[in-house]
Amino acid sequence: MARVVAMLPVRNEADRWLKSVLEQLSQIADAIVVYDDASDDGTSDLCRQYPKVHSYRGDVPWFGQNESELRRHLWDLAVLHEPEWLLALDADELLEDGAVLALPWLIDQSDYDAVAFRIFDFWNSAEHVRIDGAWNPWNRFSALLSRYDSTLDPAWLAQPIHCGRFPVSYHDRVTFYSPWRVRHYGWARAEDHLKKYLFYRERDMGLYGRVLEHTDSVIASTVTLEPWIELPIPSWLRTKERI
Image (cartoon, rainbow, N blue to C red; front, side):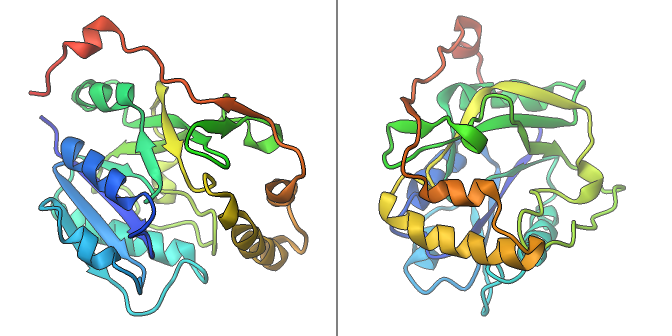
């Protein structure tokens, strides 16, 4: 069995979805490397409850200033745990059940070096996902699982935000596009939207000199939602055991 190391940046996630994420990762990963971006809530205490978690805490938050530096540091910590595969999730993302069951098959194969998933954004609830405009997830895949290769350049995209989950040299690998999806709960609470909109608006102005359409759509008066429905799990996958 290939060794899976999950890597997870967190900041003030104790009362959000971190518990559910760590519960799931504890089932599927051999080690969970957490970089705590100077949390001032109970995040550190929560992480200590999980034996597979290796938590490292920074004194000054990076995410609001330089996400690429945060991601690079998290990467450097994760590879110390001798991964064969690296799973890059955020503290509000969960694999759907089919993806959990498929993971042993995904990492046992030798045809692909990366696995990409569609990320569905739950909106205003934990039951509905947004599917309009730039939020339509059906044709957008993100590589979240990648085979580790120590010979590849570990340099990161030097960008203060939206810098990707892996070093630049990992971006164009032979990729399997998974039918299984990731549930993203970062937008599930309506009370968070304005604060997050202002955060991304400020960074858009700094990077592009304008507010991107995707950012403006956060506060759109009308959005299109549909209920989340788990994909059916094939019988061959339900019976496959992790070996």
